[in-house]
Image (cartoon, rainbow over all chains, first blue to last red; front, side, top):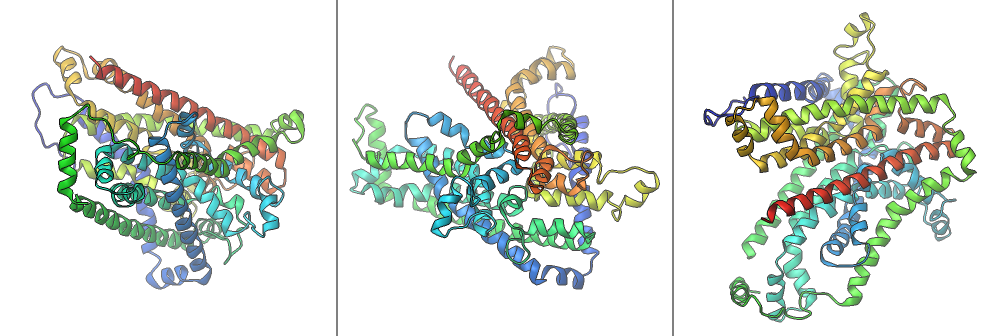
Amino acid sequence: MFRRTASTSARALPGFGLTLGYTVLYLSLIVLLPLSALLLRAGGLGWDQFWETVTHPRVVASYRLTFGTSLAAATINAVFGLVVAWTLVRLRFPGRRLLDALIDLPFAMPTAVSGIALAAVYSPHGWLGQVLEPLGVKVVYTPIGIMLALTLIGLPFVVRTLQPAIADLERETEEAAASLGASRWQTHRRVIFPSILPALMTGFALALARAIGEYGSVIFVSSNLPMKTEIASLLIVSKLDQYDVGGATAIAVMMLFISFGMLLVINGLQRLASRRYREAL
Amino acid sequence: MGPSAASAHRGIAAGHAAAPRLQGTTADARWLEWLFIGVSWAFLALVLLVPLGAVFCEALREGLRAYFDAFDDPYAWSAIRLTLFTAAIAVPANVVFGLAASWAIAKFEFRGKTVLITLIDLPFAVAPVVSGLIYVLLFGMTGWFGPWLASHDIQIIFAAPGVVLATIFVTFPLVARELIPLMQEQGTDEEEAAASLGAGGWQTFRRVTLPNIKWALMYGVILCNARAMGEFGAVSVVSGHLRGKTHTMPLHVESLYNEYNFVAAFAVASLLAMLAVATLAVKTAVQWRMQRELQDSAEP
């Protein structure tokens, strides 16, 4: 499979066989072998048992919750990530570099810390929770809390994919739009937005994919009740706790397929958006 | 807006390089700018900064003594030890892999290269608990190698080796991902020059390649370390929650929290939060350094 194509000069560098061999071996042992165990195990379940497991009402409820809160969180991140990315690239203000650096914090922060931190602030006795409680908004132990946790962990994705796209925008195009009589709002909507839409969708897809698999931060802010606030990852864990390895495998494989399908759709939309943008030019 | 008009305008603008910019046409109203800055900070404060501050406040709620008492606990120390032990294996393992993979991918042309790069990213697409599950399927009691391991009295799942393996999987692409694009960009000229001057492979790598990639490598190592020490989902599945044996720091935080031992839970969490902030600080410093070196080398 991995055969060298270009036969380089006699001074070719050494180490091709060694490094590639090690790469493939390590990749196979750590990643490919375990992942194939997942697929084979799911295949070994038999269709009836697989289907029965993944269509059980409790499982379906967990999928609905997981994908619903993930979509909501990715949407929140798309909206605010756009504002943050625009602010960081286009505006000059004191503290800009600090804000820029802080965006990466959710990448570095252990998810358990994110979860426990949100639980502390948004619980009914927390700093912000006691403000929201009289307004009838319960955050912790409800789907809103799950959404909040997923927003936190997905925050860097949209900002980091949008920043280069906004930096690449040519000011001349905006000037041209303005000189042709477009209002600033029209320029934003008709010129700027279409050109950064593909990057925005990439960021959205990355945040969504990350949110669907998230576990550590969610279990701290959710009441983890079956049918209500139980995410798919938690259901996998509780199946394993009951030694139902087959059930856990079926749910995991189904989850992989659904998120894979969603990413395919988003990729297709993204390609459509960038093609339409190019054609418009 | 017609495309031809736009390109015509661009042509004119290019012709008159010193032409004054159309005042106010590419800038938004001042109040709108302040609104953007305000919304950005408010969003970050609500989801990130206030919660992070709360971790430290809750940890210190009953004073410094209670804070330090949280670490006067053999379970806390065993969790810290296991976390350090795990990172001490996972990070070097992924560094060696990252160096090997980026050398093979960046310095040579071969068929299947794109497939290989995609496969390296695969662990990012797998949910954390599924990353733990796949090792249970291999090494657990009912797994492929389960019976063989049991008959030889080797325990991987519900023991430290499982924790290490799951951590390696989760942090697998982090170093390679930083190195591959950089080394592809740098090409092979310098290494080929060194080789033609008679340098051996190892010497070329150590004297020529390593200095060129040192900042990116460090960047990868820091990120890999932070993720290795902070991983929760994958480790939770393979650990079996044996206190004092297979609890890492994040798992210890969870069990303290579930026992309503809040001060201790937040104290251990604050240690992890400090690790995250330190990681961010070093990462930002390295990033600025990389940019400066890039600018310096661009200017003759």
